[in-house]
Image (cartoon, rainbow, N blue to C red; front, top):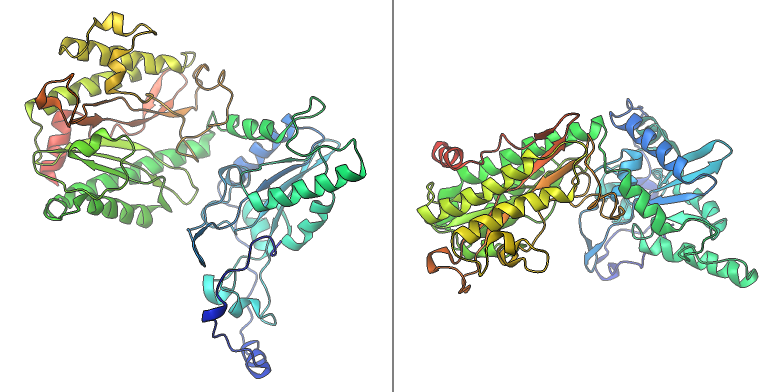
Length: 499
């Protein structure tokens, strides 16, 4: 599989010695490296159960789930590698995944046999370990052996070179997670297309024929498997929220330096990212550090603005653990430590909407009702302040929605191994679905008054507030996983004063 990616442009700067003398010397006098087998990781049995559930959905069909490869940032420099979420969910492999690995579920008479194909470590008699900057041990560190990975994940493993046999036997009914590794997908498509030329009855993997499921169906099923979290996933979400809270506290502790810097938003981002790398794998998504009227830009990630006393700063951030599960939290903080009267008015309206939405969460409630409940509060408050041309009830009518001028986004999305988890799930199981114990999602209402919005008084313009919490549905109600991160006016002001 090594020939899938185009060669890197490194020739002009390569100074690796190539003499036989050097090769003989560098391949000799190395201590033995024992192949110590790890204990199975905690998530291994959970991943096995997920594979079994997926197997039951696709009997008799080969399933191919790639981890993906590193993506080029510029020339010969890659972005940090992160495995595709479906691959990690089904294997239990997280931040330590070997790039290029592929999980194959081969159909049997009673289900599927799962095999993980990965690039095995090269021996010291090969020049790979010192001369290949993409995968060489001198460059990126040692890779685990096949037996170590098998013990770690509870999965059968084979060398990635053996995957060529799978490639050669690919047929039109094989289902592939297509977006995980586009280069591999193109290779598999080419094999099927070549077979189709030989046999007109063959069809491409992506063809939507009634004879068999499609790769789109596989993507849907993989998303829907994650709608209800298992015990391991819930524990990971708790931990992700805990360390994310530490990141917010770190930011508050650095407020003096942040305010003093001409690009204080960048310092917010840097401080939070430091905590993410210390306590997790990285950030779960680009941190939003939006001070002043930048808070009215929903996805403000440039983070190049000043942070001024007297302004609010909206921080939307989450830490991704080594398991790849991430939190997603937003807090809006008064930089001076105290809300002004107008800021408090807006903040408390958003908090009221969040609390009202949380109050209805329990098994059996329609997911879309969370948003409807929050919007009722937003409509009532903006009407009460005289911002709407009609009453709150009139504005809530589907063909009006005047209040949505000040909050155009939704109130909730599922959360887990992706920050916007379960995105390919069917509408009737997601937006039109009903809540079940084990579901985890956000509640994140907001109010955003653009600096040039003439429908609101001048003192409101440039104020943006969002409060976002991570919610777990329980057997008889709900738990706010992030309730320990201060969120009321009094608690936020005390948080800033203490730190």
